Image (cartoon, rainbow, N blue to C red; front, side):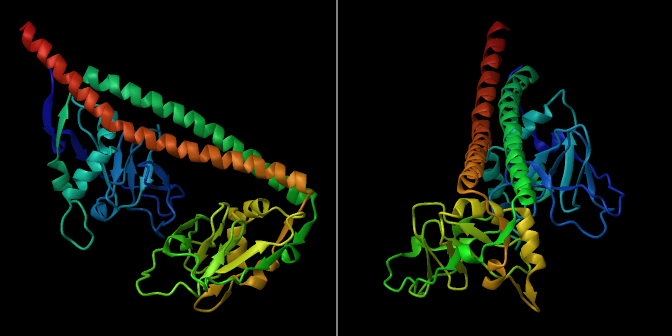
Length: 382
């Protein structure tokens, strides 16, 4: 009784079960929250892709050092999960020694990521070798203690998932409302409701901390460009409630990089971006327009209407030709209110996920301390 020390290689074993289906429709990857998600990069032949059975793990050791974390997920469903052959798939050998959920709690903790990053090799990919991973040491309390802390983790996870389920219902309500409008309200071109913003940062009112880029997730992000010795004078100003987008849509994951500045701050962006605003807010709310421009259907529309050879673009004239239903301003505001509630709750859900991850080290520490206490009691009695 008490704590026992093991190498991870003593607790897990690799498994390699080929998918065997040339064109599998359901292929998963692992996201930054260490959960399975639908994969966007699927090869033409998935026969050699790997199956992750229920209770199995999958992770990619290729860029651990670069990303500062191990992308690992446990299959918590009752069905097989298919992943790319670039992943390693493994399982716990004996759950009489370690519970698979307890191992997962260990692996999703920030401390585990930091140690894994420290142990990466010096290759260009900055990866982690499987054999090196198997040499990691892990302290284990008795199974009863493991189970106690796994139960705490599972209870927190159940609460988060219940919240997330309600979140998806809210999104479905918003989407259904919009779809009904598309069939009940005449579509109008947004040309007469929007106008270009061509103001430049000539007087250098805005510094480098105001410089933004735009992601395909429809958000403003910190710029990735090297700005050393670069003048900010020609950069375009993005005032509150304005939009900015990149006209080039090719090689962009079939999405358009577009964002709405829904803050009270003014940003600046590269002059290669197209910046515009709603010029008639009595007829069209910027937040209502943002809902339509943020939809997957709009991504498909922009790709279909992009033109060019080496680079396909969705230019300003193309944007002006976009047609959407423009109902009474009060109806627009109702939809915006539902959408804003969804966004707020989505942010809360992401915070809940982060909190669960952050509490893992506390659970691990608590289980080890309880294991030590039990060991001390056992030694005293005997």
